[in-house]
Image 1 (cartoon, rainbow, N blue to C red):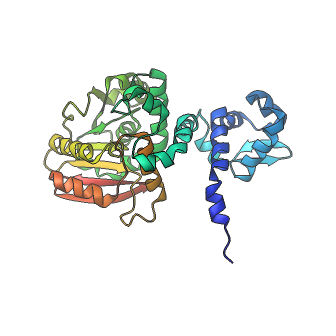
Image 2: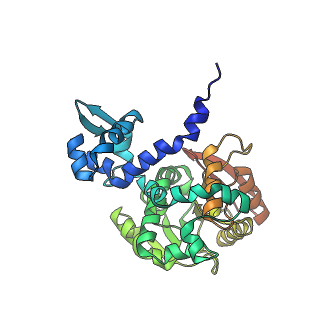
Length: 336
């Protein structure tokens, strides 16, 4: 029998989404990672009002993020691994950003669809053409953003560190390196490589702190620069993770051309995103990410593997391939 269950589940999905985001923002999972706790203990530590505390915790039990035994709450295995801020596997940075900023911005999706203009209130206030200008000017916001990028990318970074045929290369540069997790994971897995992280100068201290904390600081070099104004550092492999989707088509093609120039014959450009499937009918996350770019940027959009391969071939790459990484992420590799 046909039912409206799926319609209602998706339409009211913001209930469960906001509940999870609130738990991350409050630090609930990090608190329970220390030790299981009762309703009374958690209410005291997290300053929860008695009217909603029990329903909040039990909703997280029903959603599968917590377990409860004899009135004592504990994290699910998944929540304990990925939502404890003290663990290197923490992916909550992107959820913290969603809780503070994206959740509100997405309320303006109808306006974005009608106007084609970004709707993020913080960016609208500045009027800046580059959506990252205000972000990079605020140290606290920048560090939070860079950490969020590590959270959303870490799994794919680990796969890339082992999946690309690194033995054929001697050097790489990670463009828009952010906190540097991609460069760190490649370096740790491939001791023979000379690695560089390329980004704006404000990123240097965050990159160096992260690389040193992971034990890769001595083998990684930070190169400061602006890919709009300068050429990319030369290397055997150029990587761009979650970079191209921020920009309009002209800028995407410009960055691919710059990567082509930076590479030697036989070198490779590795681009990875939450790619949309070529039929544009299955990869819901990639399509929703593209709507996020509509809301968050003046011209950014996500794309298919075929789209990216076409841009690479237009720039002069002799061959391309698309490979799945993990979850919604896939990479497009172009060989010069």
